[in-house]
Length: 129
Image (cartoon, rainbow, N blue to C red; front, top):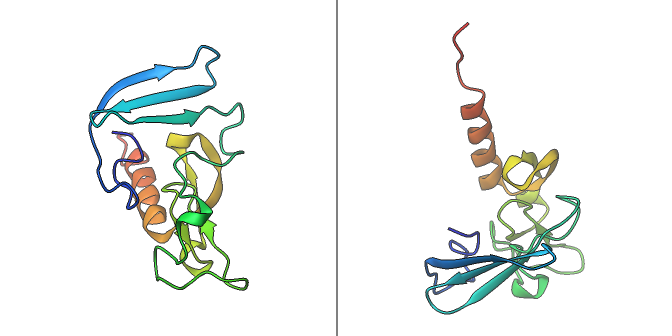
């Protein structure tokens, strides 16, 4: 399942039917059963460029968490994990994101923060000595 499957702005999700990589290995292409093709760029420096799963700034005029409207004084921030737009208050959390190979804490929303912490806790689970 690709990251666009569960997004609010993807009203008609579909199963993945094809995967491809560009000849220069700079893009990953994903085809779905509705005939759409999604394209992701591959970064030489993970976590250093805008993620392809981010909602475009124009795509949201209010916070996905609390619905406050964005303005000159209420800036929009992307959760680095889910890509949704949030206000400062709803995106004040920071976490590593192993699946994106981001090892320094970056801005995430509250829901992703708790999910990422839970995943991290599961990985560091009890060990037999």
